[in-house]
Image (cartoon, rainbow, N blue to C red; front, side):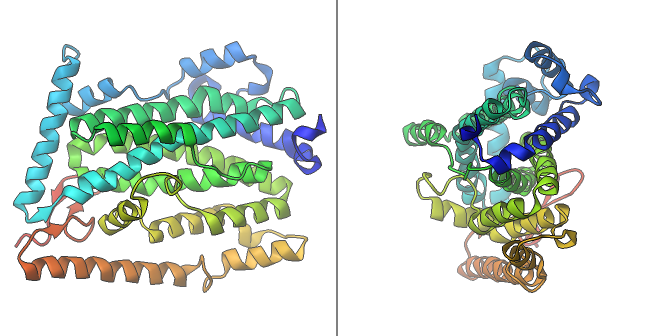
Length: 386
């Protein structure tokens, strides 16, 4: 059955499957730690996941706890409470001379619609998992991960964000139609090999960490709990894909590095393929500090370091070229490039604030500039409110 995957991929399937299973034992936790998941059947695996310490988010339960309500609270009570929290947050921004519209609505929409893409490209990962298993019967790690853990958890994120959208009055036919369409389309990462199939989700899940952390900071200590919880699960996903990619690079260094470099060069968050007004929303998110080019570059740099690219020995000239390009501190992914992007973004943000101040209007909400969240408590302060 070698037609399902290349001979090069077939050689590393045992290492790949073992790496996936090992990362799942960490992700599931509890009884799974130290277990050999290759030795249990699908029913046992399902029971292990269902009884694990990490479960998909349950939107109403999360919102109820976030609001401090007891179990007698109805869905209507919870929705009303969330809505009032959003109104209070907007009022807090406005009273400090800051326009919260783009920061709390438009830039959040890009996260919500991006999450809907996960449903689409998770089907592609699932299809690739079937190819692995058909090539090597018994190599069922990726299928189990996709079907039993990753997809259910991402679905919990999407439903939780949907609850938040309703509370923000951000529904409506256009948004809902876009959401359904994007769930069907999905992003289209290259899945022509094991290294390629792991490279895109590793980078994408890594980039979600700062976006959810920053979203949490903009929402303050109460509403910020939801993106914080989602972000925590996304970090687990990032560790899973990153841990597997590292083992795949150990087994097949040159091919994996070239596949990874290709994704780094072409990387973009899910959305550009189909979100309406993507460029406008992307700029709003970058201005706000939700997610910007510097944040993505920083994730790439950390991933390159975590993979140990600079310390590895590569055989081909092409791989050696990629190694130099990815690790050169003065190159496209080095310290100099990051510092330049940070300076550019800083100047843009300062200019936007100065324009608003001179015009006597409301300032834009910019994380770390016009609004600052305490790193522990999440309490918001507003430096320009003299």
